[in-house]
Length: 104
Image (cartoon, rainbow, N blue to C red):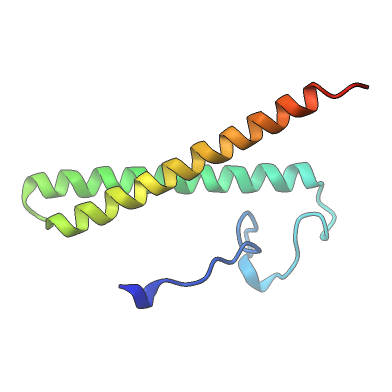
């Protein structure tokens, strides 16, 4: 299981072509706002998928099809995804509040 862990590739997040493209949204001519929005959308989608997977694995465990270790792995992964999403949301809100307090 540990052998399956790979390093994060931030270039592939939010780009439909993945890491082979080698360009970010700003470098390819897209506006940085659209790139940021697509990254946030992709991360939210992945979080929802992780939560759904944990729910499905939990239901399968109740039916007796999955062992407890798989349920624990799925639930812990979902918990980590949700905590990361909440932390990102909190940072975005605090940045917005900081910007709104700036004098023009």
